[in-house]
Amino acid sequence: MDVRDILIESVRSALIDLGVDPPPAEVGLERPANPEHGDWSTNAALASAKAVGCNPRELGTALAEALEASPPAHVTAVEVAGPGFVNFRLADSWLHDVLLDVVAAGPDGWAAHSVGGGRSVMVEFVSANPTGPLHAGHGRGACYGDSLARLYQRCGHEVTREFYVNDRGTQMQLFADSLAAAAAGSGPPEGGYHGQYIRDWAVEMPEGADSLEWGYKRALADQRRVLESLDIHFDSWFSERSMIESGAIDEVMSDLRAQDAVYEDDGATWLRSSDHGDDKDRVLVKSDGQFTYLLPDVAYHRDKFQRADRLVNVWGADHHGYVARMQSAMHALGHDPTELQVAITQMVSLQRGGEEVRLSKRTGEMVELAEVVDEVGADAARFTYLLLSVDSQQTFDLDLVASQVNENPVFYVQYAHARIHSIVGRAAGAGIERAPVDMVDLSLLGHQRELALLRALHDLPDTVLRACRERAPHQVTTWVRELASAFHGFYHDCRVMGDGIEEDLSQARLWLVEAVRIGLVVAFDLLGVSAPEEMWREGDGDT
Image (cartoon, rainbow, N blue to C red):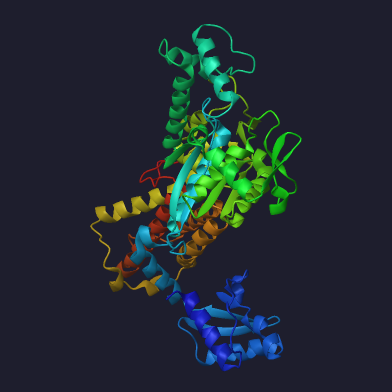
């Protein structure tokens, strides 16, 4: 049983003995901000005092005395602090149990949860027009959406990754006409596409080919290629224009009318979105009979709700005002709008040498995502895009991300894994094998560097669950950077083997290194980056 569960049950039982019955539904337990205040702290006395007509400090004192009289496992001292907080001091043995839990669970089981209960989640992300390559800004939503999907899977959900292909509208014909014009050696049509890729693709296009269909397939193939280079794979590519062909748009309009959720005014058809949480009503069909962007999106989201219990959309910053209208439309159709969740990604600024990079070296226009991946590598690109919360603006320093130095965040964390592989390799070269963990004296792990690693490993399951619930993969990135920092400190201060290191201590540290490896692998998988076995820093040959 996890130490928190032990402490929570002990607090609940002690409260009942003190007359607090029923005890709080949830007993709060957290790490004190100041380590000098102990290992864990509960506010249960403050939360329960009013119910029993008692002073919180008095109840806290009584609670502390009761717990000290019959201390839970690992507890060495219980103290009351402030207005009634109860602090626990624990023996290092609780952290040694963490090591046992980590190695028993392994990379597949550690920090895995079943809270999803198999409920289906559809994560829709990227969703670009098939009219050209993906640009660098798409990379942030792509890496975020895929990592979020991995978090949902780790927490017990059935996950579908979907790319919504925006292939309806005038932009598709302009794209096709631009390709045809380039193939004929003439300039693009008014409002057409001017990128170098248009000229490059026009050269590839077979003579006599339908520029619309050929260009459509070529653009999707290009987008698929760069996404797969980032280890991002979609379960489905859903075509917007397929809904027109299938009659889905007509069907959703009929359903809205049946719900009295639309009305006619000034020749247009309006959604009564203000009745369902939006700030005003929205046009679905314009007076000229043309659909607005909203109507196909409503049909698309209704279709998604037929395929998944929860929908998660990853949209760009320009869609911020679109969230309420889509949720109101789903509510009008009888769906729970809270099951439609939207993450809005903010802009990414590329820099090189302290200067902003706006133009592509290849095309002279927007910077393609493929160029970023080619320059810094897939791992570095993914990790960097996931450094910050997506609702904050980001600066992506191409020079730093491509460098092999400790200041490069992805290098720093992957270097920790390479160092572990180096330790294991040296142990094998010296003929040292890890003994079964239940035969190893883990109580020898008492150095602050060792304990810091075990505390970090204990935090990973909570970090994963919180990152999933808050749709915040950057919390995993933050955690793994902290683990890597703790490991590099351990590597510097705590030799694993060699002269002067007793065999028993060496065995314990080898298992500690294995536990850290498991934690790194779990985090790397959630972030979609690899776990390299060898790396070199610029300026030395250390691995």
